[in-house]
Image (cartoon, rainbow, N blue to C red):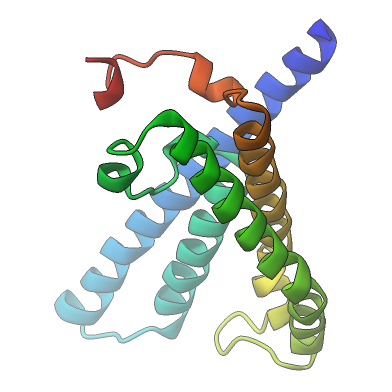
Length: 173
């Protein structure tokens, strides 16, 4: 179990670094875009394409591999205003509903990503199936996370990341 946790921590650290690198490259290229377009008068297409692709990959990769389930957006005002039993009902309902929708749409998402092999990006000429390929891990991670949320609500077990207290969290004041 310790070996698994070590590998999981290494993968999490690598994922954090990759996300930071994507965001840094997006920022640098965005500044380059401003310099090229407004200071030098050279409108370039590749900068817009790079920023768009890194934004897409940064958001979906972060959700799939970096964020904890406890960091997802919730309606905290409603969720924490009801008793724990109702919170568990919310968890089970929202988890199963969301996982069900994503399970149902997974074949269509796969078909779309693989279909986009026929198109290429304008500047880099990358096949769009490569550009959109990050959506499949994102899609699967939503299914897994929501099933875990439903499971924890069903059996009244907090998720592992909810057991750790974080000083920046408003629920531990």
